[in-house]
Length: 170
Image 1: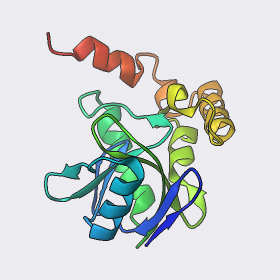
Image 2: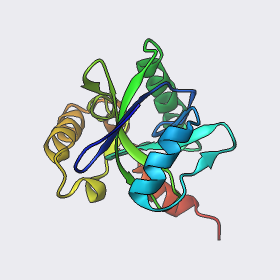
Image 3: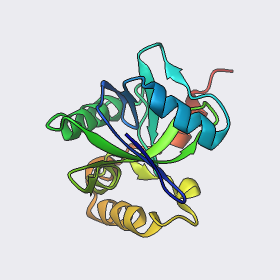
Image 4: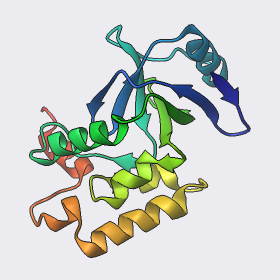
C-alpha cells in the first residue's frame, strides 16, 4: 500500500532481508515501483532482482568491511526488524544510486532513531539539515556519543565516511 503525502511517500511492506547496517531489501512490487518512479521521475533500483533497495534515512552505518562494527550493526538491524511482519517506510528521497531513502517504523517507533541511539550508526547531518527529523536523530546521536555507547565506546572507531575515504580503491 502506498500513501502519497506532501513531502514523504508512506508504504507498508515486508522486509526480505537486511543488506547491511543501513540498507534493507523489500519485495519488488509494481504498485510501489510505479508510485516511486512517478514521484521521483526516474527508475527505482532493483537489488539483484531480489527486491527494492531501501537506504535508511538520516544515518550512516559502518561498512561491512569496517570490522567488527559493520557486521554487528547489520545483525542489530536484522534483530530489530525480525519480530515484525510489516514495516512502514516513510520514503523521503532517492539517492544517486536510485535507492529509495526512507525512515523505517515498526509499531510506531523509528528503527533509524533506535540505531543511532544505540551507538550503531552516526547521524548523517548532511541529509538531515532542514528536515523535520533533525532534532530526534541529532539528540540520539549526541546522547549515544556522550554516553560512549556502541561505536562511541571504541577509541579506534572512525566514521563510515572517513573509513570509505581511506579504503577507496586508487
